[in-house]
Image 1 (cartoon, one colour):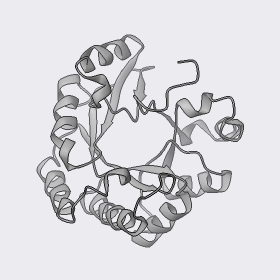
Image 2 (image 1 turned 180 degrees about the horizontal axis):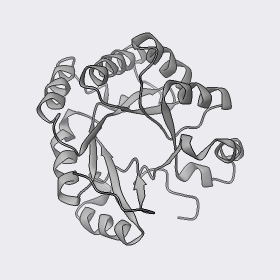
Image 3 (image 1 turned 90 degrees about the vertical axis):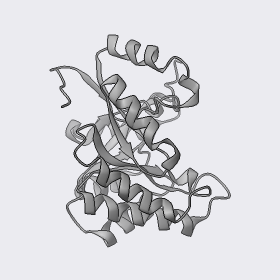
Amino acid sequence: EIRIMNHSLIDTHCHLDAQEFRPDALAVRAQAATNNVAICVIPAVGTFNFDAVRELAHQTGDAYALGMHPLYTPQADDADVALLDAALATHHADPRLVAVGEIGLDYFVPGLDGPRQEFFYREQLRLARRHGLPVILHVRRSADQLLKHLRQIGPDGWQGIAHAFNGSTQQAQAFIDLGFKLGFGGAVTFDRALQLRRLASTLPLSAIVLETDAPDIPPHWL
């Protein structure tokens, strides 16, 4: 069981298992706790770290997600879809397993195979529906394509987070209409992020979740 006290914070996206935090991940987590962070959601990025994020979440009292990140699709095998399916089935009763993620599409990084990304994205969306789990979406110059596949796989009943959202007002509303929250973190502190700041200031608080994406996207004052 995960307990959250009133007025505590949830970091909805933290790669606490990342190499940058080794060997002091527990100290990093303890420091976050002193700043009222009650829960971190630790998303996997590939089958190779499924065990790591699950074990770390149990060690620190946090939550985790299992999925294959689009940046790791070049190393992924078609059989990894079945491995994810099996892992979700094995751990379905684990209250710390809260989502399928981090999944999505990335059209910013050059050299990634678009159709290959889409294959894993769609298959993981299907697994999320099958196992009744929300999804954590990687959104990088891909909002419209992500929305298209969401509507094709299932027009309603979605839950999840559009992580590190940096799209238009119209795209934001489209995700919200489908049942998603929008993740805001360090990028909203960037001096040049004027559109993102305007969006964050106009959206209802019920549509926004907070995230660090640590160790990535630190705020501008760090």
